[in-house]
Length: 269
Picture 1 (cartoon, rainbow, N blue to C red):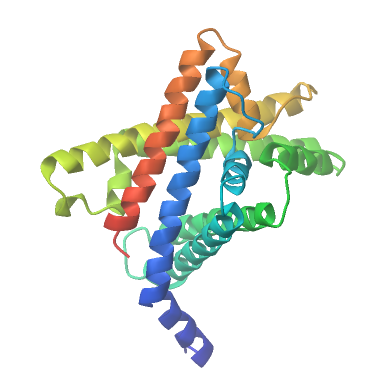
Picture 2: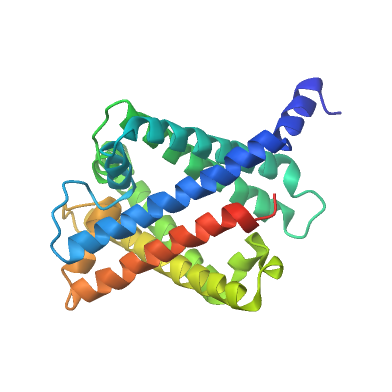
């Protein structure tokens, strides 16, 4: 039987204030991806930027703006609220629905992602300047010291590649449309949102897959190199026509960010 505490938690999960903050979290999530796309464009075309072209670089870019720390705390709070909403979805939101177990796992995973990003925003607001790539390298080095650590890192890399493939498939199949109410839009607007989602999910999937591939390759070949999203973007830039490939990917991140921001308005909650 549900306890008083679980009833209160469920009421909080269904509350209007949490919904408003969660929708604001989607805006923050989208803005961060737009900034990543901008940093990737600067990387591609030689713009001067001291920030890494990854999520931590985007947060550091926010920190440098007027009232940047206040903005970061707002971003952190909204992302944590979005994570809490996903937790409530994972526990109560998918009951008696087709594929409920899978949807619960997806919601739980998204909650972890949003919470981690919220914590990152708070750390940058507190003065941390460590990059996501550097943190991943430290975590990887720690795992490699464990028994079977190399196998664990390779498995992690393969899982990340799988996540990237899932994003690409989601973009190709347009299954992201289940997360946004295009029926309330005009046909032209609905088509535009669909294209943003397709481009955004495919581009992010390619980037995530490149992160996993780079991690796996570096581990198998004992070749220490840049890791994380920043390292993957540098690896893409080093390829023939790398500037143009990176430009397309950067625009894809911008498209994903715009789609996330539109979700804040049209996503059923």
